[in-house]
Image (cartoon, rainbow, N blue to C red; front, side):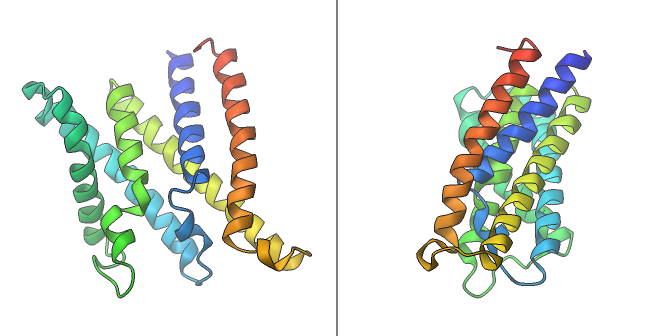
Length: 194
């Protein structure tokens, strides 16, 4: 049982870290406004809440209906509605801001949807849902810290001007995703998952 919980924690943390590194949600992390750190923590809590709400909906409300392929179709709108509803309830950023409509509608570029999808298909009990949700949040925070540090160091150290900003982030995240996927493979092999 402990090995199963540990493997779920590793999977969730490393997989959401990889999702962020592949470009989902990087725009919010690279923002240089002072409220960005608060925004990142707020998004983490929203992803945590969305994962729990969506698992409860799909486990107890929609499970008796045995939706089959319709489950995969419903996860996108339900995840977005849950994310935006939690965002409104917690007093976060309003639904629509000037020039920020796309991010608002997509809900952090798909992070809640991906986390919810993995949780629905992997978690059996509420304890596993909590482990997965916490792992997703920690993976997102880890990736956000890495991106912020790379961005900060690129402003301090000598970096060619054409590489500053987004190009350097995507190159760095590509290299780091190779490292994280190698670490994930080693850890999953050590836990006898694959």
